[in-house]
Amino acid sequence: MKPNAVERAEKRVPMAIAVQLSGHANVQGTESTFTENVSANGARVYSVRPWRKNDKLYLASLPGGFRSLARVTYCQSLQGQGFALGLQFLEKTQGWVIEVPAINETQLSA
Image (cartoon, rainbow, N blue to C red; front, side, top):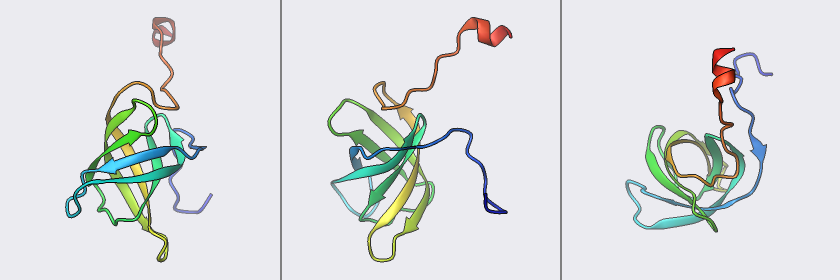
């Protein structure tokens, strides 16, 4: 691990999923793109548009019924090849490719 790197609480799984992004402050419409990796609470997604940290956007999976309001945690330039966004899901529907495991009452009392 790099000296100043922060370790993630949850592991990301490499997975390309077709998604649509919408809600850019300066560009109307939707952008069809894909994920690089995913977790239960977020994803790394490619975009042709630059986004600002803490921007809010809507992500929808294609195909499928997953939708979420998401927060941009970072926007990394890919040297003329677009941008990589770190997204944190804020309000999500069921049906994401990775779900948070349910905690039962036995685990809570342990």
